Image (tube, rainbow, N blue to C red; front, side, top):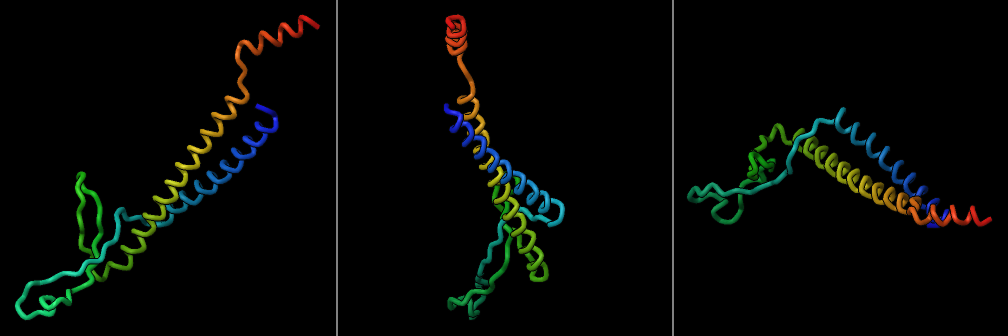
Length: 140
């Protein structure tokens, strides 16, 4: 690989490293300052099946808020009371944002590893290269 190619790879790795530092700071902020609630928010409408109720004519009750999450490997919906909806929304959205930042960190780390592998391949010589250099030095 040419010196220009190696230089470009080094520059790219510096850019990715800066991105990783920024993401690391952002995720630490989420972990230290924002309560997180694992799960996703769902709003559901329900029928009560009482004779003569509006829900029997198509106008369902709700919306009711639920938190969806996995417990013991199974998806569960947990009802969120009206007085807790605001906090649950904030905490669950903070958790979703945290997961997105984490996924971005993983992508950047993979990119960095790929760049480092390319740098290694471009900088590494085989034994034959050293033998040729030694022969060239002896011949001059």
